[in-house]
Image 1 (tube, helix red, strand yellow):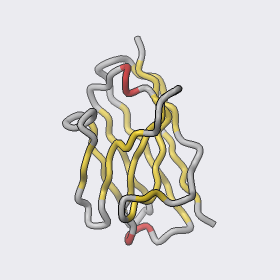
Image 2 (image 1 turned 45 degrees about the vertical axis):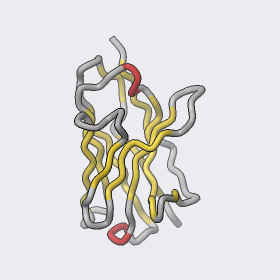
Image 3 (image 1 turned 30 degrees about the vertical axis):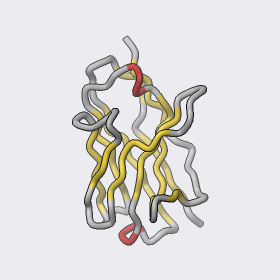
Image 4 (image 1 turned 180 degrees about the vertical axis):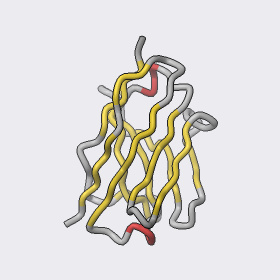
Length: 117
């Protein structure tokens, strides 16, 4: 059974930082490219960051230079360090596998990140 469990979200002031995590089970984590995406109310899902099985990363222009994703294959877990947060970063953040530019059919509950003063 595939499980993707996001955690670590919360309320943070503009300019602040937050690190969210994605714990996985039921997949062979180390052979998958992984992605973070987010969805704000009334908006389409947005791809935020991708990390390949080998650790190569790519970021959306909107977060480049502020967000960093990493993975720990021994723990089947990936992370998203978010710095210099802006109100427009407010969204529910999800993780998923991301192979050949496609998400799997499995989704977790996401973790809410709210940036507000």
